[in-house]
Length: 150
Image 1 (cartoon, rainbow, N blue to C red):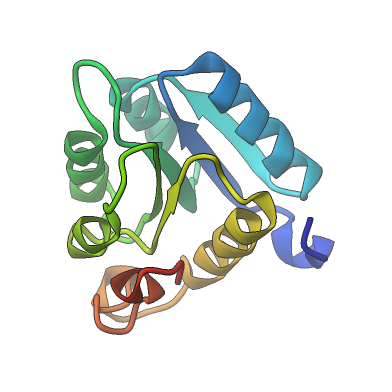
Image 2 (cartoon, rainbow, N blue to C red; image 1 turned 180 degrees about the vertical axis):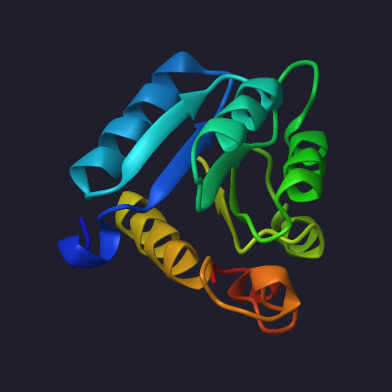
């Protein structure tokens, strides 16, 4: 686990959107242990409800979900909250370019590297308050465009 400054993390809210309950709950537990306030959503619809009831800074989003897949969910979330930071988590290979083009600030393939993922979430939470371009870096500025997390 990275050495995250607890004062930095406190108050940062993250939603994990994944149809697999074991993955969802494990990621929520890892995020909470790292000092984040974390919520679980099994679908884009559940995530939108959380966005409406909490000030969410970052979403961790699986692509391979039944019904409304992760790409559709990301577009819907961005429409509702343009400055929301999204990090893709997926078993699908080679999704980094597409994730960057869709406005995600990071893309991680499963199995996940937790220290690297937590560092990306911390950076995304920090950037969620940044001004300009609706709080998102331009794709060329984003590490996701280079195949890494921002």
